[in-house]
Length: 259
Image (tube, rainbow, N blue to C red; front, side, top):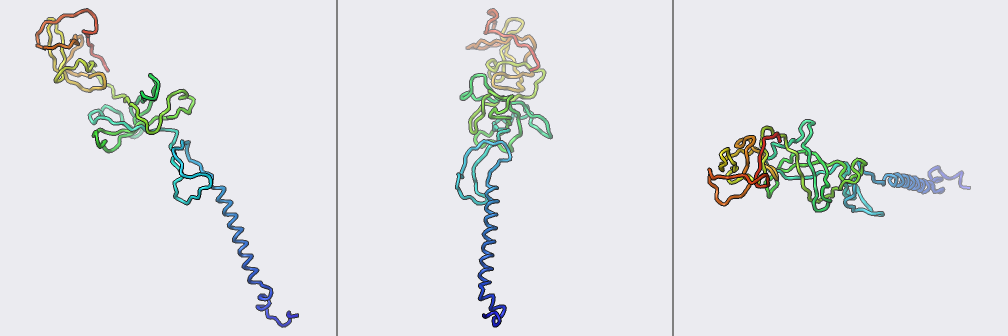
């Protein structure tokens, strides 16, 4: 009845057209929010870009997180780093990778956790650019591939554990023209007791190029065929007569070698 007298603007008001448009807008907004929530849900699957072991987790099912929140800590399974300390004087005998070169081979042992004879092999990776604060030793990093022995070629080998203490035995550069002698036979002031051709005790000053846990590598002071006196003597006087007591552990003949 009012169609002939209502203006177009009043007709929209009578028919609640603004409210209807607002309701439709809210529906469309809600539909867009649902679609965005579905897309966000599809993206909530967390994938690491590498094979990893979970060290710790700070989020669980139902947790609300925001961008930048820490969800946990992962450690890669491809390679572990072992940090070791080395005396500064020994660094020159190690091969540290530069421009693609291969680092020195390293044997890793854990005597408290692994069976006797078990070990893992790694490579010297790089030198850390600062000394250890308390010991003032140089620090190096060693890489060990497949530390948890997941690959078939390492199946059955001992596993490295994060935070554990291990022993690292590094392969030094080859030494040439040296005599390898047990460190037990190095006397005071880097001297060695030798039985000369007259069966008399002779004290030789020696030059030691390198020492490891068990041996000293001597460049001067010993000749091929020298007989080293291994018996500990209370009084040592050069020229004292000495004699062999058979081929037992009290006497030794050291020959120059390339070790």
